[in-house]
Length: 62
Image (tube, rainbow, N blue to C red; front, top):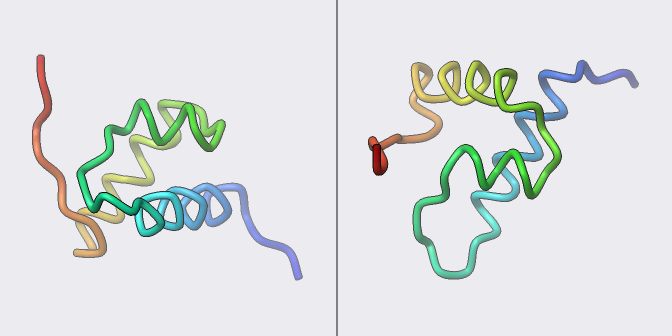
């Protein structure tokens, strides 16, 4: 079975978020670094997940 890069990255990001023992929010930068996902690609994936209601977001420090 073949999985697209976008699906692979989305699943890896979701698993990383779900597996956090502390339940705290994680930044997109940290997700990308931990899972080696390109920043721009991850931003688009997280936006899709946010629009579909799978994840919630909050603005971080500027």
